[in-house]
Length: 470
Image (cartoon, rainbow, N blue to C red; front, side):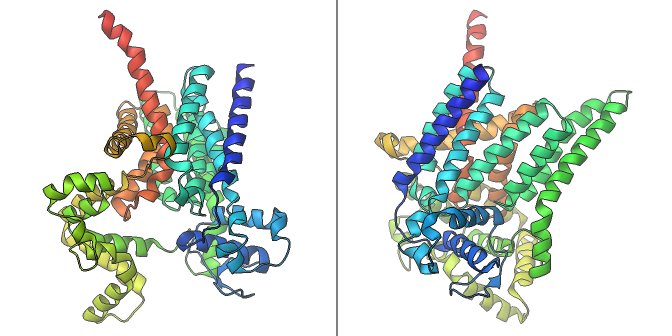
């Protein structure tokens, strides 16, 4: 009965937050990644081609620039919503009278985020009551710092989908480590595959994550003389890996056939190249540039920068315009080397040699980009009443607690903590080490961060009485 009431509460709260999504939607135009997702979905529905062209053509160029799952969900909305039954143009959905309507897809994603927060808390905490309280707190704080923020809820970026599917994967992982059977292995493998088809970075993170789940059990069984459990373990994890790869394979095969590239997306070189250019700008400038406004005011004097350096022609001009000017920079460097081939192979080589030439600079950059990526939570609603510096300090401490809980679980070989927070912590570390780590990339971690902080608080509360008696 308690489980039924808990699931009912989860469904009702999820429906409420899904319904509330409409309050945040506007007719603001879609740009950048959000526009690409909408336009690709339009071509899928209207022309049956997974391609991209800003001109409404029957033969758009096949693309693998964006991950497929968010586009498939947008396509489903275009097929089912009556507003799209009449003919419409690309401009209608990216900056016209149907722009607000296409954003209704975020009702679905916000519903899933809330629902999987409840499911994950149910698996992690000792009673439905505690799990329900933690879930409600997590939902409210996540809404105030992530889910109701304009760039996420009023766009078609992939952060909301990634948050929902990251929570779903973490829930499947915790259930799997509670009972490592084949059906749960399949569920986890499929969830990981769908997550990787939403954010490609999770393919690489997922491989390491499987190893982190496998090794503690493998080391424990290595001491036993009975080899049957070890064989069973290998079979179970083999099923997990097979389900993971099988979920990915249709998209990878499609890309190999249509684009000649057997991968999930084809923008890795561009991300690594931009990171290389930003690393060249120097660590102190990057730290100042990446700091929230309240911290800029506090750190400016110490770092030797001021707001004037952020203006046109200022010392941080290279950081401000690295993304816009990167094509020109690459072209100039290729010409200087006498290279006349495709830019992507050149970028791969340039990034590799930049790391080999100065590995210490690269290691330093990991810390700098971790700093840049830590500021992914933003205040809204009641949290705007907090002093800005206080909010950002608390958010940074929360992220450090999250990473600490994961690392503590890793050291203690606590598979439940590894399962719950491993994919999220892996994402933060991946973005710090291999991308330009704009804070938006880490925003899907918000619910996991809050759950980890509340888990830590409950641990301290649970241990406090024993320490007091001692």
